[in-house]
Length: 482
Image (cartoon, rainbow, N blue to C red; front, side, top):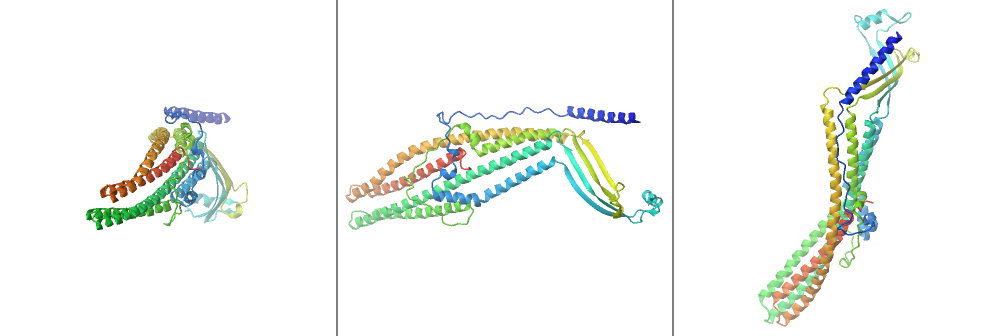
């Protein structure tokens, strides 16, 4: 008899082993996924630099304007998009706990009560009618049943499918953290850029008001010249038109100021109100020097590159998870408890004691197309993540290169515009003097004033663009989130 049992055990073991070998042979081999490339040029624009990098400076130290710092502080608390991202991080953190719990045993407690009346002319009814529970004690006609106990289920993670799932969830969480950092970088840069646009608009408005005063004085002079028959009504009307034109432009600038203020209010999560700022000395403000370091630092400084890297690592684990679906899933189920048809018998052990232990292995055998398709999809997504990662590196390098070129060109442009403004400002007084002495036409006075105004507006815009280029370079290097 023992030999027969041993033979049955050996037969079952061999059957499971042969089934496993057959299923393993059907598992597809790992596709050759191209490794990601982390190669970047050694320097920017072939100019050797050291490893000093402005991206490692905290934004609070990078910006010196206290009003701007206060706006950014408020935005980091109240900005709706950022708060939405924080909830996404919390969701990713919960996913880690879910995945971690999947490869631990599930222990449940249960309790139940039921009542049953079976027909006498049935198998169960006939048994109950002819069989006593105990000597001289028949089964009750309404049979109750009470149970209480513990049950355990546990999937043995021998293929690391569940543990890899937990690791992938951790990487997804880290990816969302970098996504949040990338959003902070963009938010800080957008607030700073909008703030300097507002300062530039304030200065443009001031220039227009100063120019209007000059033009109104010139208009008075032309009117006096007309009364002395030294100028025509045409000259008067042309000067009047120029004054009206700039008065109209003044209202356009005022509207842009309101919209820019409200854009800042939206970014910091509050309803429209005046933005506190100091517009004095905008043209005279110095542009800080930014140290770019070396291109390889982008891989550790830029949140979007780090986010793509975490997504890539998670996709590699997802391929392993998809491949593990081809192997048998091995589980254990166990339970222990008490059961009796009357509560008073519950404590009568071992008669009321029940227990079970089950082990099973389940593996796909027929119609595995869905699992194959899922495995192929995981491989395709991994290759897609490789391209996303390489694209992020390439994009980061090009953004830095563009802003470096932009800063250099704006610097040279600003020098020339300074000379242009100086020359045209002097030309205004010269044109008026020549007009008074009848040595210049009124059109020359008008043209000179118009060109002087345009040059002053342009130099303010160039100064603004210099600030914006510095902010964009700081952002492109990966600064602004720490």
